[in-house]
Length: 80
Image (cartoon, rainbow, N blue to C red; front, side, top):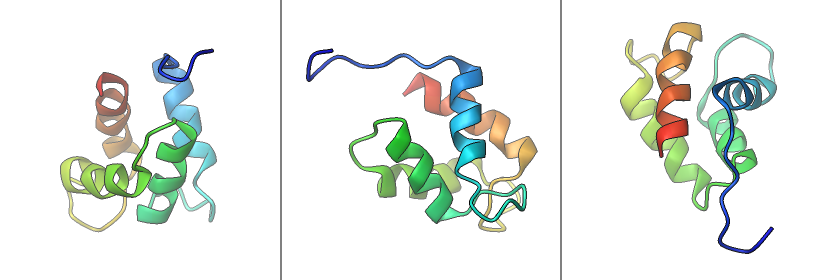
C-alpha cells in the first residue's frame, strides 16, 4: 500500500477498534482511550482527534464517550 493510500474501515471495524481501546473495560472511552483508537485508525494527530471527538460526541459532557455517544462517534470517524 502506498504512502498516501487510505485504509477504508467498515462501521463495524471502526466500532471494534474503539471498543478494543477501552483499556479499563468500564464501557466508557476517555481521552487517552480515544487517542489510542484514532492512532489505530491511522489518524495523523490522534490527540487532536480525541479532543475533537469529546467536544462533538460527548453529549452529556462527562468527559467520556458512552455506548450511545459511540454511535455518533463511529459515524463521524468514518466520514472524516
